[in-house]
Image: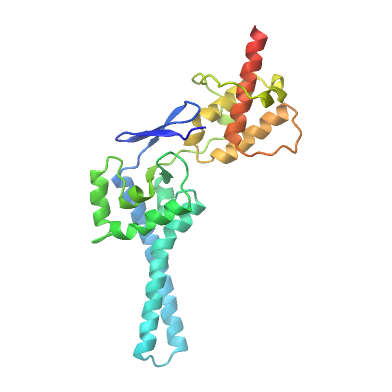
Length: 270
C-alpha cells in the first residue's frame, strides 16, 4: 500500500488516500493561530506566576539569609522551570489531545503532519524546539513573517517538523454515518482469498453505506480510530463472527469487508 499523496493549495490541504478518496482540510490562518497562541500564552503565564510565587514563599520559609551563590542557584532553577513550561506545555498537550493545545482546542485548530496523519512525539518535539526561534525577536516576530510568506501559514517549526495547523474536524457518531446519500465508493482492487471467509451475505445495504461513508471521511474525523472500531464490531456482530477476533487496522478491515460484500453482490446479480 502506498502512502497518501497530498497537494497543498492556498487555503486547503487536499489529500488522496490509498483508496483513491480525496478529502481536504481547511488550513488555519494567521488570525486564528494568533488567537490560539494568545490563549496558550495566558495559561502559561498564569502557571508561571503560580510557580514563581510558590517558589518565592518556600524560599523565604527555608532560608533566612540568602548569599549570592544560593540566589544564583534559585534564579537558575526558576529559569529551567520557565523553559520547561514554555517548551513542555505544547508537547504535553499535543500528545495528550492529538495535536491540540488548550488554545488550539478552544479556537478549533489541530496540528497534523502534511500527509494528513496525526503528529507523533518526534514532530511535536521538533516544532516546539524551533518555536524558540520563531518567537524572536519578540512574541513570534520571525514566525509571523515566515507565516505571511508561506502559502499555508506554516512557521519555521512547522517547516522543520513537516506539520501543518488546520481547522479541526468535528467528531462523527456511528448513527450519523450512512444516513444521507453519498458519492459512489471507488471500485475495489482484486480480493484476497481470505475475503471469501467473511459472512458478508448477512450484511445489509445500510451497513455497507455506513462503512463506505466512514472510509470516505475517516481521515477528516477527530475520532477516526474509535469510530472505526465501533463500526467494525457492529459489522462482525451482524456477520456473527467469533467474538475473539483481533482489530489491528479498522480502516483496512472495514475496506476488506466492503470489497467482499461488493464481490458477493455482483455474483448474485449475475
